[in-house]
Image (cartoon, rainbow, N blue to C red; front, top):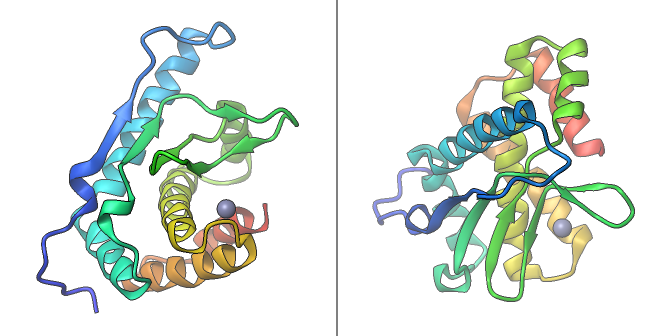
Length: 178
Ligand SMILES: [Zn+2]
Protein backbone atom coordinates (compact mmCIF):
# COMPACT_ATOMS: atom_id res chain seq x y z
CA UNK A 1 0.00 0.00 0.00
CA UNK A 2 2.81 2.41 0.77
CA UNK A 3 4.93 1.38 -2.16
CA UNK A 4 3.57 3.79 -4.75
CA UNK A 5 5.89 4.40 -7.64
CA UNK A 6 4.47 7.79 -8.59
CA UNK A 7 6.37 10.89 -7.66
CA UNK A 8 5.04 12.49 -4.49
CA UNK A 9 3.07 15.54 -5.43
CA UNK A 10 2.57 17.56 -2.30
CA UNK A 11 6.17 17.77 -1.19
CA UNK A 12 7.00 20.44 -3.77
CA UNK A 13 4.21 22.63 -2.45
CA UNK A 14 5.30 22.83 1.15
CA UNK A 15 6.80 25.91 2.72
CA UNK A 16 7.45 27.49 6.10
CA UNK A 17 5.90 30.91 6.43
CA UNK A 18 7.94 33.06 8.75
CA UNK A 19 6.84 36.42 10.02
CA UNK A 20 9.44 39.11 9.61
CA UNK A 21 7.67 41.14 12.20
CA UNK A 22 6.93 39.09 15.25
CA UNK A 23 3.59 39.69 16.96
CA UNK A 24 4.06 41.98 19.97
CA UNK A 25 2.72 39.46 22.44
CA UNK A 26 5.66 37.11 21.81
CA UNK A 27 9.02 37.24 23.53
CA UNK A 28 12.34 36.11 22.11
CA UNK A 29 11.81 32.85 23.94
CA UNK A 30 8.54 32.35 22.06
CA UNK A 31 10.24 33.07 18.76
CA UNK A 32 12.94 30.52 19.51
CA UNK A 33 10.34 27.92 20.48
CA UNK A 34 8.09 28.52 17.47
CA UNK A 35 11.01 28.51 15.05
CA UNK A 36 12.03 25.10 16.32
CA UNK A 37 8.41 23.95 16.27
CA UNK A 38 7.99 25.02 12.63
CA UNK A 39 11.19 23.25 11.64
CA UNK A 40 10.09 19.99 13.27
CA UNK A 41 6.65 20.30 11.65
CA UNK A 42 8.10 20.99 8.23
CA UNK A 43 10.51 18.05 8.41
CA UNK A 44 7.80 15.73 9.69
CA UNK A 45 5.28 16.62 7.00
CA UNK A 46 7.88 16.56 4.27
CA UNK A 47 9.36 13.19 5.17
CA UNK A 48 9.30 10.84 2.17
CA UNK A 49 7.48 8.14 4.11
CA UNK A 50 4.66 10.44 5.14
CA UNK A 51 4.47 12.05 1.69
CA UNK A 52 4.13 8.62 0.13
CA UNK A 53 1.35 7.86 2.56
CA UNK A 54 -0.46 11.12 1.69
CA UNK A 55 -0.12 10.33 -1.97
CA UNK A 56 -1.78 6.98 -1.38
CA UNK A 57 -4.55 8.54 0.71
CA UNK A 58 -5.22 11.22 -1.90
CA UNK A 59 -5.57 8.60 -4.60
CA UNK A 60 -7.91 6.59 -2.42
CA UNK A 61 -10.04 9.63 -1.61
CA UNK A 62 -9.91 11.10 -5.13
CA UNK A 63 -8.26 14.27 -3.95
CA UNK A 64 -6.49 15.89 -6.87
CA UNK A 65 -3.13 17.47 -6.32
CA UNK A 66 -4.14 20.61 -8.25
CA UNK A 67 -6.88 21.28 -5.68
CA UNK A 68 -4.19 22.23 -3.20
CA UNK A 69 -2.29 25.43 -4.01
CA UNK A 70 0.29 24.98 -1.28
CA UNK A 71 0.83 23.77 2.28
CA UNK A 72 2.03 26.48 4.65
CA UNK A 73 3.65 25.72 7.97
CA UNK A 74 2.88 28.89 9.93
CA UNK A 75 5.29 30.15 12.56
CA UNK A 76 2.86 31.45 15.16
CA UNK A 77 -0.35 30.06 16.62
CA UNK A 78 -3.71 31.21 15.39
CA UNK A 79 -6.12 32.55 17.96
CA UNK A 80 -9.81 32.43 17.21
CA UNK A 81 -12.13 35.06 18.60
CA UNK A 82 -13.36 32.58 21.21
CA UNK A 83 -9.77 32.31 22.43
CA UNK A 84 -9.37 28.72 21.27
CA UNK A 85 -6.44 27.72 19.12
CA UNK A 86 -6.65 26.36 15.60
CA UNK A 87 -4.62 23.42 14.30
CA UNK A 88 -5.14 24.01 10.60
CA UNK A 89 -7.22 25.54 7.88
CA UNK A 90 -8.06 24.89 4.22
CA UNK A 91 -9.01 28.22 2.72
CA UNK A 92 -10.78 29.36 -0.44
CA UNK A 93 -7.50 29.93 -2.24
CA UNK A 94 -6.78 26.21 -1.89
CA UNK A 95 -4.07 26.79 0.70
CA UNK A 96 -3.61 24.51 3.67
CA UNK A 97 -2.31 26.34 6.73
CA UNK A 98 -0.79 24.43 9.65
CA UNK A 99 -0.53 26.23 13.00
CA UNK A 100 1.54 25.31 16.07
CA UNK A 101 0.24 24.59 19.53
CA UNK A 102 0.99 27.35 22.01
CA UNK A 103 4.24 27.31 23.98
CA UNK A 104 2.32 27.43 27.25
CA UNK A 105 0.43 24.26 26.31
CA UNK A 106 3.62 22.38 25.42
CA UNK A 107 5.22 23.47 28.67
CA UNK A 108 2.33 21.95 30.60
CA UNK A 109 2.63 18.79 28.53
CA UNK A 110 6.30 18.46 29.50
CA UNK A 111 5.20 18.32 33.14
CA UNK A 112 2.90 15.35 32.47
CA UNK A 113 4.98 13.45 29.94
CA UNK A 114 8.59 12.88 29.05
CA UNK A 115 10.16 15.23 26.60
CA UNK A 116 10.23 12.53 23.93
CA UNK A 117 6.46 12.14 24.21
CA UNK A 118 5.94 15.86 23.72
CA UNK A 119 8.10 15.70 20.63
CA UNK A 120 5.94 12.82 19.44
CA UNK A 121 2.81 14.86 20.17
CA UNK A 122 4.05 17.76 18.05
CA UNK A 123 4.86 15.50 15.13
CA UNK A 124 1.64 13.47 15.39
CA UNK A 125 -0.46 16.61 15.65
CA UNK A 126 1.14 18.06 12.52
CA UNK A 127 0.49 14.89 10.55
CA UNK A 128 -3.09 14.52 11.78
CA UNK A 129 -3.74 18.17 10.91
CA UNK A 130 -2.49 17.82 7.35
CA UNK A 131 -4.51 14.63 6.88
CA UNK A 132 -7.56 16.44 8.30
CA UNK A 133 -7.24 19.50 6.06
CA UNK A 134 -6.62 17.38 2.97
CA UNK A 135 -9.84 15.51 3.70
CA UNK A 136 -11.65 18.86 3.86
CA UNK A 137 -10.67 19.31 0.20
CA UNK A 138 -12.96 16.43 -0.60
CA UNK A 139 -15.59 16.60 2.15
CA UNK A 140 -15.69 20.41 2.55
CA UNK A 141 -17.66 21.25 5.67
CA UNK A 142 -18.66 17.73 6.70
CA UNK A 143 -16.66 17.97 9.93
CA UNK A 144 -17.92 14.71 11.36
CA UNK A 145 -16.88 12.70 8.31
CA UNK A 146 -13.53 14.45 8.17
CA UNK A 147 -12.83 13.73 11.84
CA UNK A 148 -13.78 10.11 11.51
CA UNK A 149 -11.56 9.64 8.46
CA UNK A 150 -8.69 11.57 10.07
CA UNK A 151 -8.63 9.05 12.90
CA UNK A 152 -8.82 6.18 10.44
CA UNK A 153 -6.01 7.38 8.19
CA UNK A 154 -3.83 8.54 11.04
CA UNK A 155 -3.95 5.15 12.70
CA UNK A 156 -3.17 3.42 9.41
CA UNK A 157 -0.04 5.54 9.17
CA UNK A 158 0.87 5.18 12.85
CA UNK A 159 0.54 1.40 12.63
CA UNK A 160 2.75 1.28 9.58
CA UNK A 161 5.38 3.10 11.66
CA UNK A 162 5.12 0.58 14.47
CA UNK A 163 6.44 2.98 17.07
CA UNK A 164 3.56 2.99 19.51
CA UNK A 165 3.80 2.37 23.24
CA UNK A 166 1.62 3.29 26.23
CA UNK A 167 2.93 6.81 26.27
CA UNK A 168 2.15 7.42 22.63
CA UNK A 169 -1.32 5.98 23.11
CA UNK A 170 -1.96 8.44 25.91
CA UNK A 171 -0.72 11.26 23.72
CA UNK A 172 -2.93 10.16 20.84
CA UNK A 173 -5.96 10.05 23.09
CA UNK A 174 -5.16 13.51 24.31
CA UNK A 175 -4.87 14.72 20.76
CA UNK A 176 -8.10 13.29 19.45
CA UNK A 177 -10.19 14.10 22.48
CA UNK A 178 -9.58 17.81 22.17
ZN1 LIG B 1 -12.10 20.28 10.29
